[in-house]
Length: 269
Ligand code: G3P
Ligand code: CA
Image 1 (cartoon, rainbow, N blue to C red):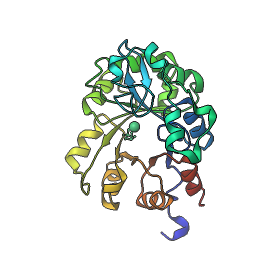
Image 2 (tube, rainbow, N blue to C red):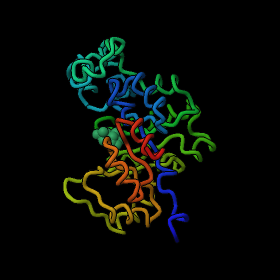
Image 3 (cartoon, helix red, strand yellow):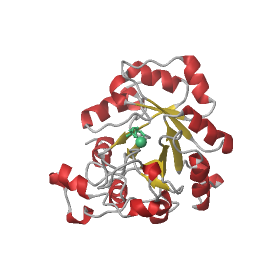
């Protein structure tokens, strides 16, 4: 077909605000998620860790050190202890160009608080991090989503929640508990990525797509995944040039710390 009939590849590309709009505000804080939404992110991306007393919190690392003024492992601290910490000042120091006084003293949010704040009409892309460290994390996650009205037939059909993990075991556990929740298998490559039919056939039995690191994939990889009708959401894409290249290859979404840039690219800017 001629150019006029070519499918507009950018039309359905999902804009996932990685840890919120984390280039502009401290990752995994309410202002970062708010900004992700304002910058037209389709999904708020949330990494989960679990406290000593069993609360799911939004945090990327297993340790408190990088993104708070605390130290030590999340699993060794209660929620009350973690709530004492400052999850914003580190960002101001590391990113003076985006520093704001209101970021000082921000709290680490629980998953419950994020879902309370943004409600069931927003979309969430939630990662079970270190599920081996936190037995019971998947049960707690599903119970929380259910309580917030995010597992109704309608919400599931509209993919209001996507659950992602590098851990196949964790995804299989979720799939076992509720086969209707859309899942994304995260993949990490240290060298040029290849994926074969057998692996994609297996992923298809429990997930709707894959999330590879973008810097080791090529057009063939994307086409292979798409030939299985699986979604492909590479991470973490921050430069417009890379965004455009991936869209041309046929990705169906991507994670970005700059949802504003992806929005512009999708608008043809
Ligand atoms: O979840 C997709 C991407 O976020 C995986 O990398 O380390 O930022 O969670 P990470
Ligand atoms: Ca993540």
